[in-house]
Image (tube, rainbow, N blue to C red; front, side, top):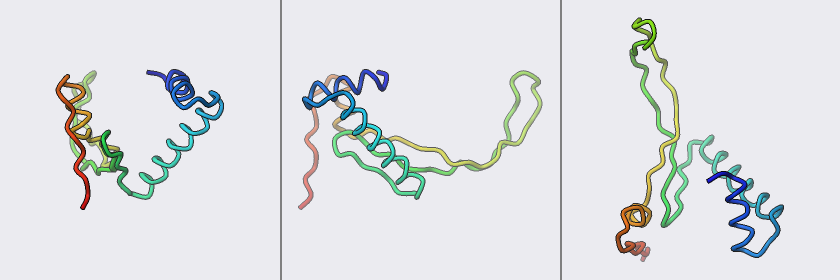
Length: 101
């Protein structure tokens, strides 16, 4: 799904204009990116969570030249799907979200 398709879907389901839906989606994306830049984890109950993980420096091989090369340490984003999302992907009965007490 492309962003344009998501904008149309959100606009239809929330009965707002595509301009408003686009602005809302952009705001969510900016919020998630901003939190990840600060090193914060993002959790969407029933969907999954995003967090920044560090990759260690390692040695790799250039596939064209077969030369060994050093790959520097880096950061990336890891997404972990919730049990509810996993069950939807497996066509199983959805798992109910655990309530906090």
